[in-house]
Length: 457
Image (cartoon, rainbow, N blue to C red):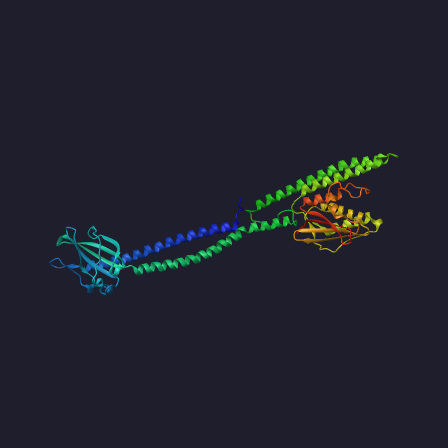
């Protein structure tokens, strides 16, 4: 399944496409309006010229047309190929045309050619055609009738070169395109700013989620717009509900532990109080094994319930200091040097404090049991991982046996009490958090246990 693209890019792309289509439509519409306006003005000027010619046109006694060029106001009509022309054609009753009965000097040795056109007296028609030298012209014509010649019709026309008009339209379209491009650029910047402002609440929500994921907060915090706030409230409600479920699971696990540990303690005490009973040591040992099994299963249940819970953060330094004091008290008669190297104060585990205490407690207890004189702890963060190393100077474990001791119920020294679950608990708890436990040889020749866990920001 393909991944969806960026919302910002999709919004910006849709906005830019819409903007481009709108500007293209505006260019076509405004360009068309300007072209129509120019043509109307052009036609109006031609009609004024035609009216002037109509007013100056006269007929003699023989019915021949007369028009004095000096009576015309526009000097272009006397200049050859000036771009402004007029012509008078005679239409006979049989439909034959006598072209160019009179014409302007600007036509020189050419004529304006028009197809036959039926016009009522005084009507105007407009045509596009070709004038002198093959240039495009705009032609306005009018049909005239002379009372002395009832069978004859006269066709008076004025034509003007449209090159200047077309050039003006092209220039306007160029300026309009440049202006709309500038406007489009400004609108694109405005759209980019609008998209950025519109998506800023989502970026704020992303930052708030990162704070939750890194364990700095247990809920989404911050100020959000009214449109986004319901989503934030619902998400915080889910987080709170999840926390309630985890708390309920932890409470039930504690109740189960209390319900089982108390009868086991009673059994152990009862077996120890019976004098001369050979079963007493066996019962005490099995009670201890059962208690360790209960502890192991409850730890797994607790971690499975709280795994990935947002807002989890356990500082390492104070918890480790407390465990070192406890180990120093438990093994005080052996005079062990139990110490931790200097470490940054902000080192933290992204998980439950009880789980880290369970894992480090097992590692330190095993190290103290096996050490000859010293147990040292150091920790370092590498990227998103926290590495805690517990070294001792004891006999260590042969490389071929290290994988076995990490199995549940396996003990290398059967002479010492225990169930063989200590390291197995550490392995399983670390795995539930996505971490691991590895064994190696310490610098002092003993065992080096490296616990890798997710680090909190």
